[in-house]
Image 1 (tube, rainbow, N blue to C red):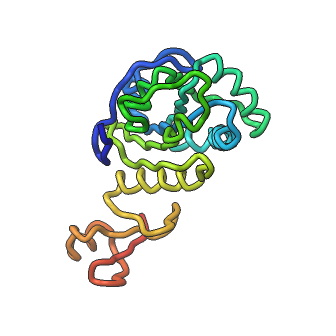
Image 2: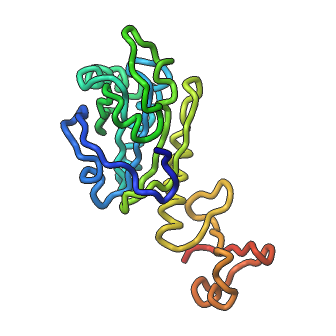
Length: 216
């Protein structure tokens, strides 16, 4: 299946480094970030998981649960966690899904249905398992992005995107390019000038279709 924005993400049961989960139940009423990688004990992914671990307090501040997924098993995940902590100086306090059967990778359209893991595989055999999915409390997909194996993901940008998604969901606004918390937001074109003034107070009209206002 192809995942689309605002579609309910697939539910599944899985073993993780912190025990078994049912995904939708694990999300509960929180926001969630599911991020995948092709193999444990690989250099780029080790730095990425370290970056996620270092942001633990930021995820919690935003009411967001993070969970990794890899096509290796639980015991590999647990051993790899020591390496991640060595690199980042932070404990891996989030679960990592053991997707050695490729169930999650296929459900989330990271691998084709006929994919399998050959004996003696390398990360290249699961190279497309390099995606990030931001999921709302309604279990709908809000954002997804996929990176090649050679390019480390920018988790500061993922955090910024999460801020924007939570802000637009809560306040019914849009955010401009490079927006960060505290900056002006965009009033949607579907809101009339009269309604905009009543709802947002004074605002700046840059163009007839581009109106900006601070959040109050």
